Image (cartoon, rainbow, N blue to C red; front, side, top):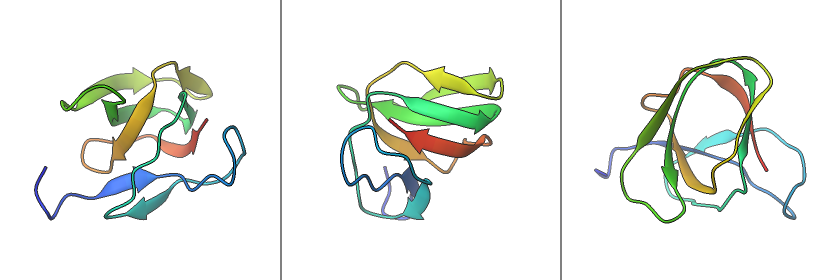
Length: 84
C-alpha cells in the first residue's frame, strides 16, 4: 500500500453500532463483517491478510461475512457500507 492509498473506514463507538463509512487515510478498524447497502464491488483487506480481495457484483442489502480491517476506496464501487 502506497502512502497515497485511501481507505474507507467506519468509526464505531462500540462493536455493532450503526453509522456511515467515511473516507480516511490512516485509521484501521476491525469489523466482524460489512453490510453493503447499494450493490457493486468491495475491495477489502481481511483481518489476517495483506492482499486486497475484491468482492464483485454484490447485490443490494448484502452482508460480507469476513472479518475485515480495511475497505479500500480504490476498487470499491458499492456504497452505503456499514462496518459491523
